[in-house]
Image (cartoon, rainbow, N blue to C red; front, top):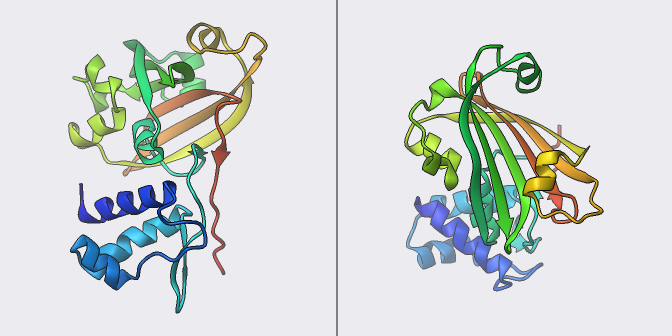
Length: 238
């Protein structure tokens, strides 16, 4: 872990556990540099990310003011893996791999994933349990030639960690769509739904590499009453 990440995670945790409270000033960059034995540039990098993520607001002449305390929420923007969200938000979760297979894209799957007909892809279906309850069902289709030697155990923890560290895949951006959909047969079988539940929140993502080529399609189903999907927006003056 890089030095700025260590500082970032420590400050995030202190905001989350109310060591630094809302409307309270963080220590100055100078004091943080001394505390973490790092350069002010490194501290500033961590503070910039805290600001981008909506934890603090930098105020000229005052410093960095805490503007949000953390709670379990799923951000709409950004390209973050479930494992990374789990780590940053501090909740316990267990992933189970239900399906791990290769398939050829047919016309129906092509219309959804945008992969050409005949493309060989990995089909991965995983459940996510929080507090022992299955609340998320992730279905992924990934181009086979991106990771031809991928194993079931590689996707049981963090798919993106495997792709980026073992395959040196450079993941760049995603196009997302969030909808309220009817519960599917798979949802009924694999999620711990209330008998009266008729809908789920579906987050569909087409994910691209640095060369702008599509390599992944994901459809992630969430129980409607378990998650708050949020966005922190900062106005950019034009």
